[in-house]
Image 1: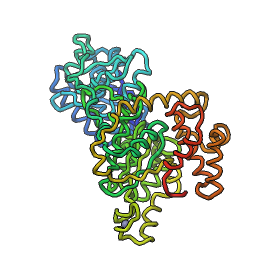
Image 2: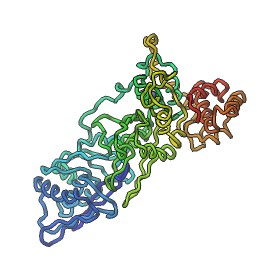
Image 3: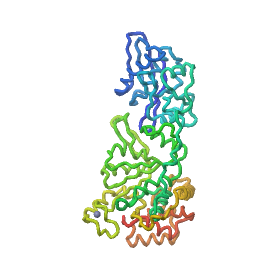
Image 4: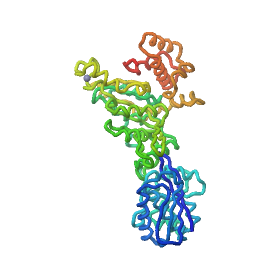
Length: 504
Ligand SMILES: [Zn+2]
């Protein structure tokens, strides 16, 4: 007799549904699994048999063939265990075939029959939701993740006996997650902690409002990381589907805290410069594609501290995500596209010795060393950065100044975002940072006195044409923050100062 059920495998950051078909026929006892599978799936045979043997059901003492379809899809890991068991039990008449066919089952089986948590449950849940009438059954520890996806019939399963009872209609799946933690609210870092850095705080607000990529240059200890880590607290909360997308990525990376609920804060990801290129960009072999820091930073902030120290290929690899909001990983047998739309913040010392700020009298670097250092952030990467901020150690006298808390600044950021959303309605852009320079120059110039300042700076050689585009982009964000309908002379002058001292 042939029976089937469903399960899911993760490819990149999406789940694909898999049909698990079992054929129990007369013949010598044996079990064959067909459909591309790795070593883990061969081990699954032994786990599934042991788990069934320890359950209330019986392992059929005949010839069993299990097919995992589509066979072209690379399948990995142990999340198919429970579905294989269900297909075998349905094919041997121990659970109703109809109930098995209507279920999508995830979970690794322990030898004792317990269902263990698997990664990628949110992605699987999103895929199952597309198919009406299918019920998702997940290991109880994963139920919190599955329940984050609305309009889905999902339940938790403790062990194989529980699963069998559910399919026979003798028991209900669990409908509540184990533990509910309070949302992450309290751990967000507040801008009020940044004392005596009015310029830097202001620049951070502008970067948050316009989504501008930002570079922070300053000596060690000047507070660059402190500033960067406060950017997510200024960004608008993620919308439902965005939050789900971000949490699904974390679930695949095994980073979802059970019971933590849907996290609506923009992610903040800060890989170390010594981290491997795969851990930053993503990669690995097909069927085992690991998401990198740039994908974990999707819809949030990617912070590269000591950016010039990152390996050249890593910095080069940022080009595609910065242009397209994704990264394409081509592997021999499978091409995977991972989302990677992030706001980039890079931090650097002024020079290799770190003391080359201001008049640079303490700096021990040669001019060649300094040039080479800043040239590491070059070309396409530097081209994408609208704002360059010099961060100075706050004066001791300013340390008592308490700044505005993040919540107050975030309100202004949100109001500015709403203004720009209205302006870019009907265009492919949502935030000012996404608007290409030529389009901006042609259709959305500054007020005439602002445009004159820009033109003069270009004539003087203080700004390149590209630099002038970036100034105009930031000028629009300043106008949006100030509630002005078009950037004026003051907005352009301030945008020029926010571009920083380097001419490029
Ligand atoms: Zn130096």
